[in-house]
Image 1 (tube, helix red, strand yellow):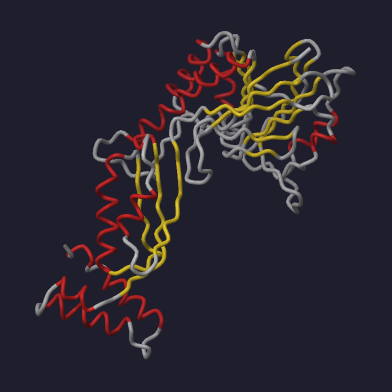
Image 2: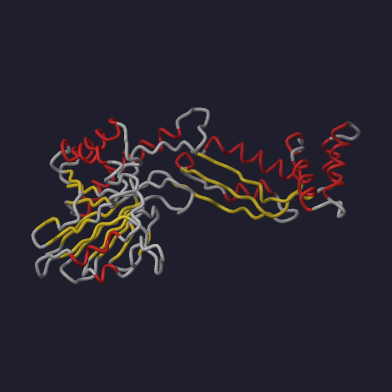
Length: 372
């Protein structure tokens, strides 16, 4: 008998994205919040396509321990509407059992029949011959390996054992709060579904992070996804298929410029050519460019930015090449020209400290917006 399920985690419903500046239309944060709710339907669709009746959410379904009534009730309603799927919610560090106790109590009280909170560290029968072994997070920083109980969770002989946990995996740790990478072996697990790491990560064939179904940071460089898992029987190797679910792509990209390179052409070659409305992009410029090319780079970024969900140019790592020609573009005789010449002299004065020369370089570069 094969058992199929969807492995996902870190929905972080209710995340507000306050660190992102709002564009003029004031709509980015709302779009990002709504995209996370949309993942409930996407996960249900993945389950139907895979022939799975269960979705395992490995922690941090909610972004905080105190989601608003709207966030909580709308999430439960969306899961209720996907009635062909049973949803298993594990408390994570953001929605841990202590801080989010009122929420878990309410979920236990009002949740529809197809939504289950995995609050006890004891085996749960998912189907005949299949057991879910949950490791709920009791407090935000537990200070211990929460999967240490898994080897002691007994199941009948021949039962498929699926672990569900939230936390980090490392090879060695002195703190004792990380999950051993061989926990699947020591606990006799057929699969260990993990959450906490928002990117996709395969620790081993039986121990895997699905990552968040909707990305929320400039770190992983791919759209969110879930895992469709098939276990053909006790002791068989899992068949794991990645399914893309994310709406937005978050990318952090380097742009290395060299002396004489056309900054505008380099940036435009780097920018994605399609789906810009659903792309959040940070470009980190480095290398060297003249004042005029600094200006051209910023101008190009500003020209393309409205097409993106978010576009940020970080030019702090881009050095400035000074030239008399740049000064001529600023002014031939006025006060601004005199100030620029003084700053150029200071930037190249070996008698000054490195910090003072850097200050002169930065002040000189601030004259860039007046070019053109």
